[in-house]
Amino acid sequence: MAEYIPLELPDNPRLVENITHFARALRRAGLPIGPGRVIEAIRAVEAAGFTSKHDFYWTLHACFVNRPEQRTVFSQIFRLYWRDPRYMEHMMAMMLPAIRGVQEERPAKAAEKRAAEALLGDANKDMPQEQQGEDKEEEDVKLEIDASFTISAEERLKTLDFELMSTAEVAEAKRMIARLKLPVDPLKSRRTQATLSGSKIDWRRTMAAAMRKGGEVQNLALKAPRERWPNLVVLCDISGSMSQYSRMVLHFLHAVANEKGAGWAKVHAFTFGTRLTNITRHLRQRDVDAALAAAGAEAQDWQGGTRIGTCLHMFNRDWSRRVMAQGAVVLLITDGLDRDSGHDLEREIERLHLSARRLVWINPLLRWDGFAPKAKGIKAMLPHVDSFRAGHSIQSLEDLGKAISKADDMGEKARLMALL
Image (cartoon, rainbow, N blue to C red; front, side, top):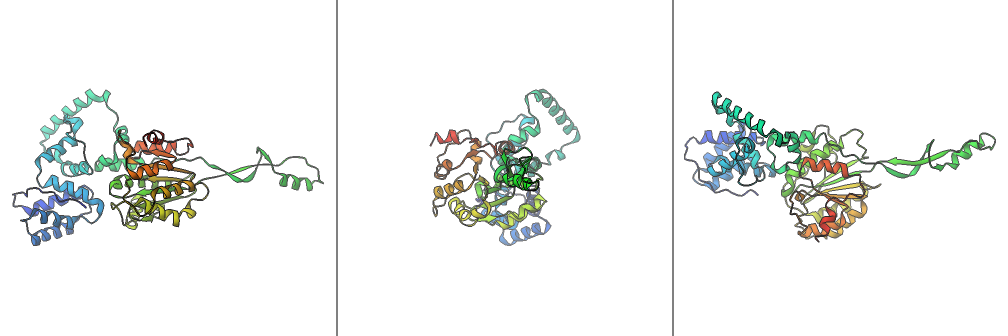
C-alpha cells in the first residue's frame, strides 16, 4: 500500500484548477483519468474538506487510483505536484542530466522518472522562442563535442533498467521487445521416419519391398529419428517487487507465443503472487495490449505478496503433468524473496526441476554487482536450477534468447554457488 506523504498544502486558493492540472499529469503518466473522474475528485475534496493533509491525499487516491500498480506513480506525482521544491529540483536534473550537465544526487526510484516526465515533459513549450533557440544551439554544441564518447539511444535503452525507464522509454522498449526472438533447437524423438540418408536400416520397409519383387532385396530402406519441438512453460512473479519487470517479460512472452516458426510446440504462461493463474489463452490474442489487459484482469494478485512455495506446489499438483510432457523448458521469473511458510520451497523447486528438461531462473536482482544469495528463498532455489540469469533489461532478454538452447549454459549459477 502506498504511504501517505506528509507535505505542506499549497496556499494557492485556485484548488479546482490545481486538481485539474494534477489529474492531467496523472493521465500523461498513464493513469486512465477522464473528465468525469476529475469532477468526482473535485466534489470529493469539497465534501471531505481541505484542512487535513492526510484526508486530502487519500481522497484523491480514492478517486484516481483503481489498480495496485498505479499507487507508486500516484504517490510520486503527488509528491512532485503538491510542493516539495527540493524534490522537484532533483527530478528536473534527472530529466536532462546529459544535456544540462547536472549530476544526479541519487539514482531514480521506481516510477520517479515517469512522474517527472508527466509533470515536466512540456516545460520547454512555455519558453520564449529565442530562449529555445539558444538552448538548442547549446545542446547541439554539447552533443557534437560528446558524440564520440556516447552510445546510440537504442544501445543505451538496451542496457537501461526497466524500473528506471520513462514513459516514452517504456513504449520504445516494448517495440524493441516485440522484435526479440527465443529460438530453440529441436529434440530427437524415439519415433522414426523414412529418409534417404538415415543411419538405421528400416527392416520392415526393406522386407515389404523385397516381397513385392519375389523376395529379392535390391535396396535397403533407411530411417532416422523424428524431430519434435519442446514446450515452453513460463512462471512469472507479479508481486509488488516484480511488477514492472513482469510487465516487460510478459510483452516478450507475447511476442514469443505469437511468432511464426518460432520452434516451440506450445507456450504456456502462468503468473503467481499469492496464487497461481493460468494466462495462456490470453496471450494467444494477436494484439499485445488486449492480451495483457485480459491477463491483468484474470490475475487479481498484481503487486501483492509473494508465496512462491505455495504457488509452485499448486503448479506441480494441478498443471505439471498437463504442460510439462516431452521435455519442456521452464522459465521461472522471480526475485526469490519468498514470504511463504506454508510449503517447503526447496522440495517444490526440486520437483519442478526433475519434471523439466531445463529450468532457467531469471532474477532482476542480478543487476546489482554485489548481489549474493543471502535470502532464504534464494538459497533454497539456487541449487535446483540449470541456469541463473538476469532479466532487468532488453539486453538481458537478448542474452537469454542466445543461451536458452545451450545445455551447458549456467549463467551466474556457478559463481553464486561458490558463495553459499
